[in-house]
Image (cartoon, rainbow, N blue to C red):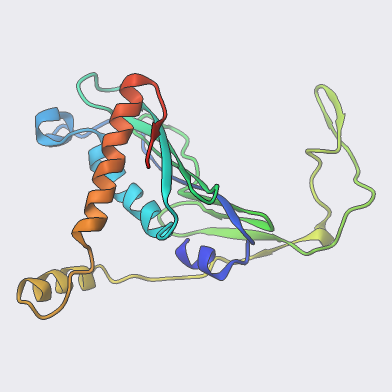
Length: 218
């Protein structure tokens, strides 16, 4: 997704959706215990939010609105949905669910000239891009309420589908960096400033959900 944003094949990105869905509830361990850091915001949210903040580096976060779910667990959150709004107008949706028997895509990226979808952990998906060909005579599609041109599918000559760019990260490199930074051989890849930003967003999620209000960042 970072490469998709960097290459700008979709044009200006205006919305990024990041989701992780499961249907087994919360495992019966520390994740169920509030005093041990349980709940999905602290378990999965920390990682998904970190990814979003890395994707939007240099673009200040302006507000957060979030809701929590307690479908399978009343003590800690078993899911959440957070909407983050950035200074340039980019909107990011981060969602985790543990009672979802049909999962939505892992990533969904919207740009002014196309859309990218990453279906699941296997990185299957595609990008659909506009070709620049204008449709002058749109054939309407029939809905239950009648005909509509607004939601009519595009003609094949106005779009083309391409494969996702592949990026393979090596997790071991992170652990090597931790060891080298402890030994004073190099600077840590993950900085305290980055960690602090993620923590502040998680705190804003809990605050927003509790008060049912948007939390603003200055």
